[in-house]
Length: 490
Image (cartoon, rainbow, N blue to C red; front, side, top):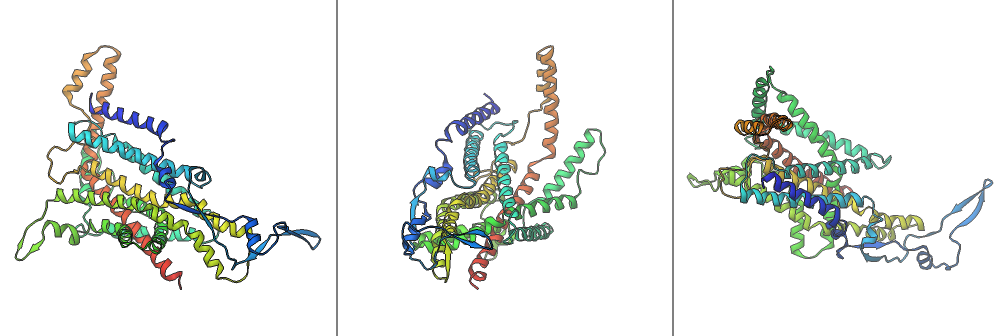
C-alpha cells in the first residue's frame, strides 16, 4: 500500500473517531469537567431576602403609581451584605448553558484529531521514507487554522457589536498599530531578524517566471515585492486585531493566577508561560540567539556549537514545549477567571448603597456563562501557533531530529515521471486511456506548481507568521499587564 493509501486510511479512521467517539469522550469536555475547576453559583432571591433580614414571604416587587401608570420596583439589598457564594465542580450538564461551548468543543477536539494524524503521518514518513506523494497532514493543519481564524473572527465580531465599552475602538486601534509594526518589521534586514522571506520570495518569483514561460506566457513575475509585503502586512494587521483581546485577557488571568497560588514551582511555571511568546520571538533574533549558538566567541577562537539545521530543529522543539506548557497551565488561568465572581462580590461589599437582586445574580452568573469564551481566547492562539509550527516543519523541509538528514521527504511533491505517465497511458485502452492521460496532465501541472511553491518560500513565509503570532501575543499581553496592574489601580 502506497503512502497515499496509508494516509487516506488514517484520515478515514480519524473521521470516524470524530463522528462516533469524540461526542462521548471529548478532550474539550475533560478540560472543563475533570473536577479541578469550580464555579461560583449565584444566590437565589430567597437567600438574598434572608440575608437582608426580610421575611421569606415578603413580596419581591412593589407596585406604585407614577404619572398614571404602574412601575415595577425590583427588590434591592445593601451592597455590604454578608454574602458567601457556594462553589460547585463543573459537570457536563453545566456546560450545556455555556456560551460558545460547541465552538470550543469542536476546535479543541478537531485540533487533537489533526495533531494525532500529523504524528502518525510523521512516524510513517520517518519509518518508510516515501517520496513523490502529498503529505495529507498538511490539509489537516490548514483546516485547523481555518477553524481558528473563523473562531477568532466570531469572537472579535462579538466585541464589535457592543455599543459601549470601547472594545470596537480598541480593536481598530490595535489593528492599525500592528499594520505599522508589520511594515516596520518587513523592512528590517535579515542580519537581525532571520526569517528567509527575501530568499523565499526571490526563489518564488524566479520559479513562477520560468513556469509561466514554459507555458508560453511572458511575465516579469506574478507579484512585485512591494505588493507582496503589503498583502503580508494586511494579513498581519488582521491577525493582530484578532489576538488583541486574547492577549489582554491572558494578562488579567496571569495576575489573578499568581495571586491564587502560593507554590513557588507553580508561580515559576506561570511566569515562564507568560514570557513564552517573548522566548519564541527571540529565537529568530540572530544577534541574541542564532549567532551565539552557531558562532560563539570563546577567547580568541570561534567554535560553533551546532549547525543551522540543528538550530532550526531545536527552535521547533522549543516552540512545541512552550505550547505544551501553556496547555498545562490552562486550568490555573481558567480557575483564576472563575474566581472573578467572588472577587466582584468582595469589591461590592466595600461600596455603599444598594443593588437589585437581579443585578447581583447577573454579576455572578455572567462569569460562568462566558467561561468558554475565555477558554477560546486562551486556546485559539495556542492552536494557531502550534499548527503553524507544524506546517513550518513539513512545508519548510525541516527535520525533527537534531542530526542532518540528506533525503527528507518533500511534502507536496507529486509523481510526474514521464516514463511512468507513458506506461500508465498505454496500459489500458479506451476510457481508461483517457483517464490515465488526464491524470498524467494533472500530475505534470501539479509538478510544475511544486517548482513554484518551494520549501524556501514556505520556510520564509511560515517562519515569519509563527514569529508574528508570538509577537502579537506578547505585545497585547504586556499592554494588558500594564493596564490591569497600573492603569486600573490608578
